[in-house]
Length: 238
Image (cartoon, rainbow, N blue to C red; front, side):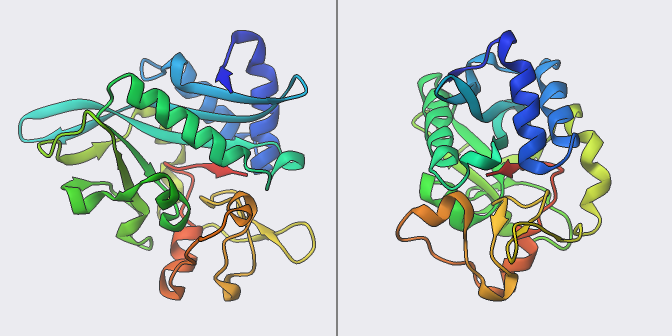
């Protein structure tokens, strides 16, 4: 794991596009990188044999309260090249980038995604700590999560305000995008926080998380909504 460099950018774009079968997510990476919210130290890659096979970004957002806006950080996107998925690379990237955030004395990291996946890293429902993350009407409130780091204080409350780089995905907040079949009986959802999952009826986490023991499956009533959570804010292709 190491921070990205300019000579990695083409490879990063290719792997992100491949992970999501779409250029939109790769465009988002570049939009964040070109913005004031970009933090080079927290844009990491994973390499295997000199090949860039994984990428994660933590960038700036704002926490808005009656006292004004306070800068915080958010995790998105996360992607692993398809031929290297389900090998623990996504988990390693999350551990590495959140450790950097802690070393920088960031008080917290926010994310939107599957609580059963991100809970393994210490993420908790944000609203339980007075932090509101606006999710689409059809998504459960638990999808907005926070990782409290050593510098966290209970006074950090308010509404998470996303930066302009994410505006390109705002139209997807209204309805869950459809599933698309891939790899036989598995499905890949380009807006799915997990990336690779079994049929929804199984309510089973697969993909990168399938290699870890002790994963608690989602409750059936939350499964479809969380796993269909749109790419507007949280992206994990692995």
